[in-house]
Length: 292
Length: 338
Image (cartoon, rainbow over all chains, first blue to last red; front, top):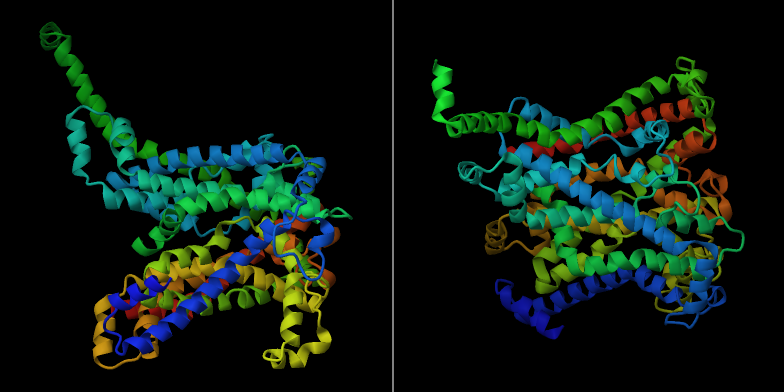
């Protein structure tokens, strides 16, 4: 930590008096770290409570360190819910959504980024405008269409409608347009490659970071998706993780140890994912807003 | 004759001829095929539903009885809504929550992003990631955890407040509210909206920090150096350089907040769902329009009224975005050109 402070001071020699600036910087850093701890606290609290029984969760002073009821909470969770089944539903939906979204959105983004064709600008404007329609506006007809297709209570009702979405196409268009020179297409054509072949074998390998970003964002948003599944999926066996957790709330004697363990298990995969890919997730999310 | 000679020249030439045409065809139609999945899906799950929901908002309909049971009622759904006290209450709650859980996010995030970019060196990415973390996690999961944090007797927030209220150094802050401790965050109407706001601010301020650091990174460093040479202190640099140049990003970020907050559903829905209460807590204090819409459509199966409600909400979102553009957006865009 001290060396960190020294470094920042050294890289900013313009800030007059070094000790005064150092103290100010130290205070600032302390404040920022405190806020970060405060932000992180609910996650810590979640992990701690997952190892406590209902009685110690609601006690004074509150538990601040790991308890020994993890196994009991785990059994209680599995007694009330087919939790691994729910996890599997979430994984299945998130993976299907991710694979299809990455494919169709990169294909669409490639189309908009690399070709000139009639009505191109109009069609792209249409994509952008469709981004602004509130999701809520369509929730009633979405349900009715899913009902009409006889897809109620099926996972495909969740991942299928969004697999070629405006946000993903926009993101991929920006990424492909800024990284791939158009000459590359002509060079590949001279070698006899078909247009799809160019997309698949030439462009896709070059835009891997963009694909990874879209994949992460899609996976996260589908893993956390609540309103869609709430409307479509009925019955404990079809529930995704967020629905399963919510279903525990209505019970008269909520077993808080089990519930919190469930929330921890729902959040843990994302925490691990984020630990490895935070920069990509963050940069990917703002790429459109800065470049656009 | 010509065709005969051609054939005689051999299959090679005619095949390459065909190949050329195939390549040209491909080049012409490939982009349309590549972008078509979006438009097909959007037609089925976007355009059609939107048109259908306008139509539906003028009907009285319970879908269980089939399409034939639809009955045209004109503007009745709309007039009913405007006479419905719960609808007005939910609209008030939504607007209240949009402002109180929206504005602080930006008031925190802008100076925070400035501090991160100006003076923390390599810790910047770690801190940014920490602030951003709540954004990527499941609302349902964190809302449940917040229920325990906000518990009345043994919730850790009230216990912390209790300790601070007894501690001589900080007691004065709480002197005015000693009688109301411990606070019944989720059990009393007046505290429900503030509780929801705490959760929403916690969950989304980091997202705005990230947007603003991205916006700040586009401001040339020379501006700050020139200001430093002229003797401007940190506050002046913030006020006269950062804020004006950040305006386009502020406009963008606030727009996202407005559109998102006016549709708020997950947070109040889960947070106020204690012991099966599904009306947004006591006195419907946490009932948002989105929640009311959900109940009307999927619990009371009154699809026409729910569709009308979604259009009223859409109109409110449109008006709010338009006003925001009039008062903040236009000026920010002018500045950019100047």
